[in-house]
Image 1 (cartoon, helix red, strand yellow):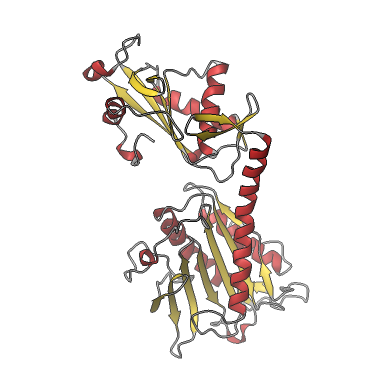
Image 2 (cartoon, one colour):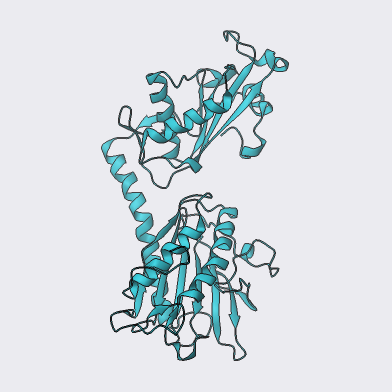
Length: 399
């Protein structure tokens, strides 16, 4: 890539690439000019973008001349409206990729070339001023993507863009399936451990709601999270809160073999809520139903309040620590068999409106990007919870 810090990308970054002889490779590609009105140019640009997305990400620089793959001079292009040009390319990329490349994985930054930098402009370039368009592409965990103009799959190597063969396509598809399978297997193992009381804290046998939040790059060979990052005791710091209606960060903390645990305990040292941040990048958050007398029902209001307080802190923390979208959310209910799901105790459910199993694993919901409305995600999780008790959905005020 041109620079690790995307926010600092500037004309000086491009000059440095020329002076230091940056080479094309797995994470960098140079093009003199690409015209979105020309089919061949569209095929080339979309192909380069998906090759980065199918690999580890990278930068495509439109407006840079190269000599045998080495940056040799600026090739500025003048546009009637550079922002319109940027948006056209984003639209072209989205419309010509399958599965569609999420927009949050693509960022195009125009870098202006003024007369002050004429000495760095390539001798053959007809213009001395204009813009260089730099496209930053992040790795996609929906890979493999193909471009739909020529229906090709591409990846990256040290030599640049390469076409994926049939075996590599199957392998890439398998890797995407493997991620969700590993996340489900992890959830299942953790639920079994909680049911067996194989956890660090003491908990009563009340029904429990367990949320697993899994970024797409969890389970990689490298540790994603340093447990100390989740350790600060100040509520205003970037730490995962508890799955608690007041969004507290707990009165009890400790390091564990898995990562870092923070919990809320009552006067008798029973745990009512905890958040365990795993080194792998997974967050496990649990809340009990213990405040409801005799646990006669699963309180959807309690679950909603907990999710509204906790989920934003989990997303923010994971992204800050390097977690990538999409982020998967798995909500499960333990010990809820025979209980209805409802807002208050006033409603009298019939026999069919009750959870029919002791371990209810609800469908995963995905936070696709930083632009995803978490309110919608929480609504989906609550509707699935109601489905588990035989009802169509949560009754919300907007309904």
